[in-house]
Length: 308
RNA sequence: GGUGUCGUAGCUCAGUCGGUAGAGCAAUGGACUGAAAAUCCAUGUGUCACUGGUUCAAAUCCAGUCGACACCA
Image 1 (cartoon, rainbow, N blue to C red):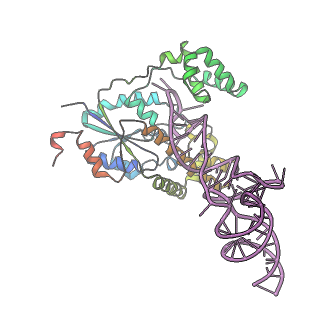
Image 2: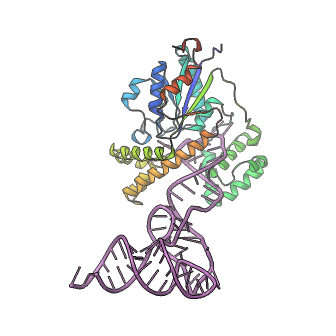
Image 3: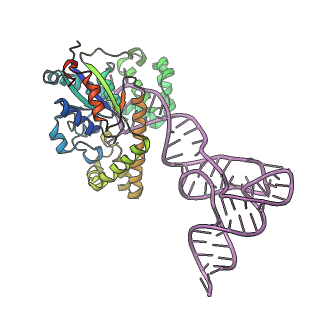
C-alpha cells in the first residue's frame, strides 16, 4: 500500500462554490485547508476577495489566508517554498490535507514545482519597464532576440510581462532563460489527487452576478475607498477593486463599475477554466456532488477502512 | 383615432447610387514557470419586424400588418 500522505487539490472557477466544498470535505476528513488563492493571501483585502468568513475560518483551520500585507512582494515560487516548508508538520497529524483555490500557477508550483530562477530585482524591473514605455515593445523583443533567440521563438512576443520576465532572468543570470527552463516536474514525497468543480456556464455566471451584488451590499465600496491611495500596488490590481477605483476617479458611473466587475469576473472564471481543463489529472464534479466527491477520495485514503 | 419617426448581431448602432451586411461592447476559444483575480492572442455571432408587390436582383423602393416612441386630437 502506498503510505505517502495525500494532498487533495480542489480547483475551479471563481464563485463556483470551492470554499464550501473544501470546508465540507476537510470536516469529513478531520483535516486542515491550505488556500491557493493569490488574493486571499492579503490580510487587508476581505470583501472583494470572497475570503472565508470568521465562522468558516472557525470551522476548519486555514493556512495561507491573510498571511501577507498588500505591501509585500510575493510570487508563485515563494508560495511553493512556504507551502513545502509547512506541509511535513501538517502531515504528521493528518494523512491528507486539502488545498483549495483558483490560482492555477500557484497550484502547479506546489504540485509540479517551478524552476530555480532568481527573484526579480526592483531596479532591473523598473529599468526594463522604462524601456517598454519609452521605446515600445519592439525594443524588448529585440533585446530578447539578442539574449535568448531560442526563447524569442517560443514565447508570446506580444506579451510584455513574458518579455520582461525572460529578460530579467537572462540579464541577472547572464544565461538564456530557455537554458534554465527545465520543463519537468519535481519529485514530491506526497501524492496529489485533484478535483475540479464546475457548473453549467449560465449557472456559474448567475452566481458571479449574485455574488458581486452581495459584495456591494456588504460594503465593498467602503473597503475599496480605504485603498485608493494604494491602488498602484499589484495586490490591488484585482477584479472588484480596480473597477471601483475607476469609479472613484470619476471615469465611470457606479452602476457601470459594478457591471464591469461582473464582466471581468466572468472573464477571469473563463481563464481559470482554460487553465484547469487542460490538466489531465483533474477529475470534474459539480459542487453539490458531495457524496460522489467523498467517495472519490475514499478510494485514495485508507482503502481497507473506507467501506462501511 | 390621425400624422410623423423608427424596427438590422445578445446590447448600442452604421449600412452610400438597389447587387443578401459591419463597427464598438458583450460573448466564445486559446496561451501561460517569481506580477497570475495579472498579462497576452484569436474568432464569429444575422428569418435585416412580418406579409405581399416592383425588379435580373430589395436591409435599401412601394403597399399593408404588427410593435416602439413622439406629436396632434
